[in-house]
Length: 404
Image 1: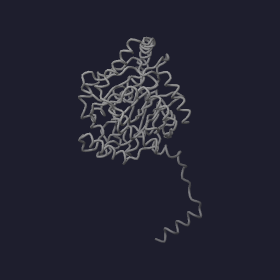
Image 2: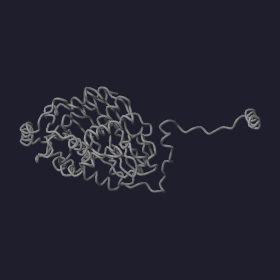
Image 3: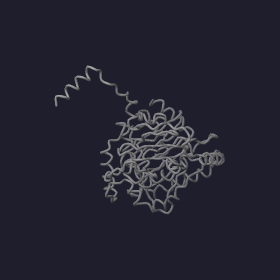
Image 4: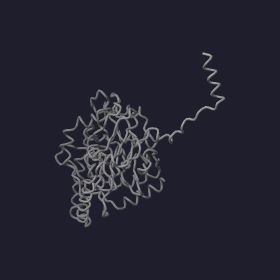
């Protein structure tokens, strides 16, 4: 599977190109540069998948099970839903983050694997999660490394890593809530969003943040467009919480995809029986790169990866001439496929919007799958009905109990 996935990813990445760098020209953010990843061409058909945040607005129910590692999913929509790795689930209960990317099957109930990211708050059984947000990359990278090693990040290690990160970034939180990093920097996150505009047809982004490189890549540009704010907030939160003036230089960025392919030579399949129809999730940790990917029907749906480049970062001020030269070369060459990409994506996006506008939850009159014990469903099939004792054994227990 590792070799097959690495080959499949390599073939997928043959059809994408890293675009010109984007950075904050005002100089507020000195430790982050974003490189859009663009496809060389687009197929005619948009995906039949929507993102988790959109599904919550259309009737998806996520409820607290009272178990820190599972959230109950009830998808009443006639389409699959992408739950992205480390999306933070927010509601009137303890915060969770999605453990790995997966697809929630249409009109099904399931158990979504999560991690608790707010140790000091109690769970509220059956409380609903009503929105999602980004998770800072340092925690995401740690979780992906643990996924590749153990198949599931030990919860107490996740709590410990969050407490250390909050301490390092001087972020106050009485409940040890990882989302407090986002909250503390919310105004700047909003202000800096415009420095990194989304390109038509863009399918991914490589972000150089301090001494780290991170990538998020989607199989379809429509999914990235709906998730792009979270993609940026995840990287910007790290840049703001751990400020510096250095970034990884562009020459290392342009070889990052090759290193991700090499790292995928060794992967671990992440098994979840409750989501067995939602594609195959994989995790990898090799050659200093940790990441995870979701593949469905032979296609890449989502990939995220991280690499620390200790000792390779340089001052953004020193790199600006090189970054501007890359941008100038891109504009002068103006690749011919860019115009086609803009037109093709405009057509796809209209069809995708029409598809989403027609999505409605199933009505009570429509047959639905009978609810199951979704926690037990991962462990076992339905238990056999109890059988009566044979007459001899029945008489034995009667005599035994009558003695008392």
